[in-house]
Amino acid sequence: QITLKESGPMLVKPTQTLTLTCTFSGFSLTSSGGVGWIRQPPGKALECLAVIDWKDNTNYSPSLKSRLTITKDTSKNQVVLTMTSMDPVDTATYYCARRLWGGSGSAGGYFDYWGQGILVTVSS
Amino acid sequence: EIVLTQSPGTLSLSPGETATLSCRASQSVSSSYLAWYQQKPGQAPRLLIYGASNRATGIPDRFGGSGSGTDFTLTIRGLETEDFAVYYCQQYGRSPGYTFGQGTKLEIK
Image 1 (cartoon, rainbow over the protein chains, first blue to last red):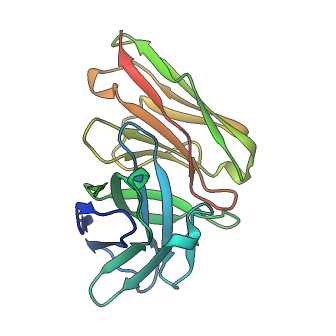
Image 2: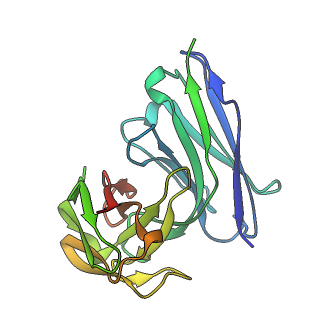
């Protein structure tokens, strides 16, 4: 059974750095696959922030790349996302999800298992 | 950067009817690398379709995906009450590789 769960602060102040942890089970990042972080502001669409694969290849949203870092700890089955300079517009539900590679010639992949999400509010 | 535009924004239909949702890309999506997701209020998205037309595990066959290049369609035949939700498309054929559309809300008429 594959599960993912997000953890981290639910409230951060403007200018602070957000650190979110995705703890997963039922699969491993030692030999295949990847994990991504996707966020969704209230009432708005999904936005992929970052993805890391088993070879430590990373892919970042071009508009947020300067603020994001994604890392993995395979021994703990965790993927960590840090996002600097938080602003109220970053208020959103943050999801982590397992990424399956799209195949030869693709630029990424799709997400087949998702965590429940964590609502992060940015406010002073 | 590739942009996905979904239409209509909201679709109002009755149970039993057929829903046709569109996802149009600003550039050709290589090799039909497109996925569809369903999201219900307060829940995480659920993968429905990948590779433009392949149903994910456990997805009923009333859900069908088609299209290639820049135009893709999600068709839901014989709508059931549980199908009323928001649907997103996502492309992974062109860098940066994880672009989502803005969503289509399917509501009960």
